[in-house]
Amino acid sequence: MKKFKIADIELDNRYIQAPLAGYTSYASRKLAYKYGASLTYTEMISCNAINYKNNKTLEMLPYKKEDNKLALQLFGGETNHILEAVKYVDSNCVYDFLDFNFGCPVPKVIKQKAGSSYLTKQREDEMYHLLREMVKISSRPVICKIRLGYKEFNYLDIAKLVEQAGVSMLAVHGRLQKEGFSGIVHYDMINQIKQNVNIPIVANGNIDLTNIDEVEKITNADAFMFGRSIMGYPRLFKNLIEKEDNLPITSKNRHDQFDDMLEHLNLLIQEKGEQQACMLFRGIACFYLKGLDQTKEIKPLLLKSKTKQEFIEILTKYR
Image (cartoon, rainbow, N blue to C red; front, side):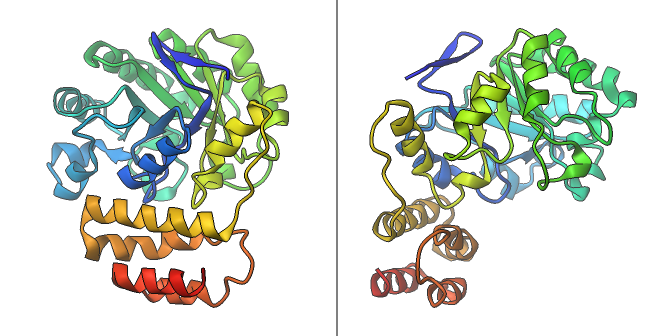
């Protein structure tokens, strides 16, 4: 099994769970650790909300050591507010890497001058200054996530800037901001970044078990980040390890999926309480059905469930 190192911290393998809004809470991270992820992320957390002491946001922060390595991901659009939040999490939270999001393409984040809105020529100096200050303040290695640009490709300039600022690892989603989450992923451009900087590069964008070999060959990346492909399927990390170790790959099946679904729900209840957890889990549960046969009857029932017992009864009936 190939290892992966960020700064002086060695990770068990090269397979990373991407930060996913509304999904990568402690519950999903716990399952990712269980099946072999070497690094997971918090959800993208607002610096402004941390500074305003928003209770829901503060509850998203990690306050205890988790089962494996954890990156705390922040986002924001104003340097002073961001640095204030960095000081808060550095003193109060437990994590291994401080990650900053320069990649989110969604309009509500762009409106805050956050996410991939930084990836314009006009904000390169601002981005460099922000990262330099974050590196000075943070007692943990600073890492970040980018796209290939905003409307135009400027990924080499951005990657070199990030390295010069003292960032320890760069994750790259192989699309522009304007390309969103659809269309071709420019893996060859991730390779160009890898050839032009000396910090570790993590490839991201539509990677799964079927194309991991091709993506590795094209990008020559140091590690690989999995987002939508692990939603409802944390055992993907187990499959990736099996593949690398030349072991038989465990196929997705109803029994395992339903077991993981209940474990995910139980962990979410521990984290958020039954009422809130069950409301959130309605949507999450449907991801676990993807690729399984004869699930048309189950999905509408799961979407209506309000209690843990209702979920158990449905899964027991259709097991």
